[in-house]
Figure 1 (cartoon, protein in one colour):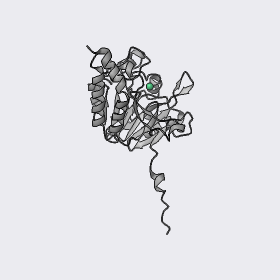
Figure 2 (tube, protein in one colour):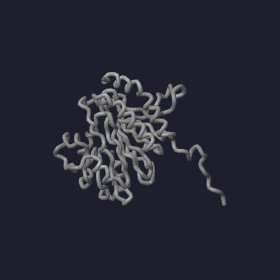
Figure 3 (tube, rainbow, N blue to C red):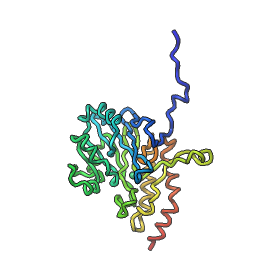
Figure 4 (tube, rainbow, N blue to C red):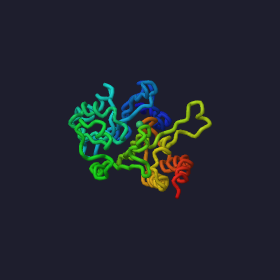
Length: 280
Ligand SMILES: [Fe+2]
C-alpha cells in the first residue's frame, strides 16, 4: 500500500498574512481557530477606494455564537454563517465594538433579528430606532457578560469618540480567550510595505492609527496614559496568535509584545509633542 502523499512543509505552514483584496477571489470566511471565523468584505471610501472591513464569528464555550462587528455579508458568506449557527438561531448577540463602524448595523440586525444588539453610546445615537440592549460595550459590566470567552481593552488617554468625526482611533478591542485571536478596528492597523519595497522595508507589522495625535485627550497626562495602556496590553496579551485588523490585514505576529513596542516607538514623537503642548 502506498503511503499517503504529504504536502511539502512550506505548504503546511499557513501564510502569515492575508491581505484584503479588492476582488472576491479569496475566500471571505476564514476559520482561524476551532471557534473563531473571520469574515472580511469590501468597504469603499467615496465608493472607490476599497479599504475593506471585517466581522468575526465566535463560538462561545456554551456552544452558542457571537458576531463581533457588523458587516453586510455577501450571499456566500451569509450562507456560511447560517450553516454554522443553525440558520442564525444560535447567535446570542451582535457586539459592535467601534463607535464609528455603524453602516451595516441595521442590515445585520435585520438578518439576525433575534440576536441581542449591543453597541456603543454612539451606535445608540446614530440609530435610535434599533432595539439596542441598554448595556453598552464600553462599560466594563457589559464586557463582563462575555467574560467566559472574550476579554476587552479600551485605550487610555484617547477619546473613545472624538469630536472630530474623522478620527476613529478609539474602540473596544476584543480578544478571544481560547484562540488568543485579537479583533481590532482602527486603533491598531497592520502596515504592509508596498510590494515594490518589501525587499527594503521590514515585513508587515502593527501600527497605531495614523490620527493618534488628534485623538489624544486635551490634558497633560494623556500621552503617558496611552503609553502605559499600550505597554500593559503588549504584556497582558503577549501570546496573541493572530491580529484581525479591520482595514488592513489578518496578521500573525511573530511577537505581539515586540510589535506593540515597535508601534509605540513609532509614535514617540507624537506623544512627545503632545506632552510639550500641554505641559504646565
Ligand atoms: Fe474603521
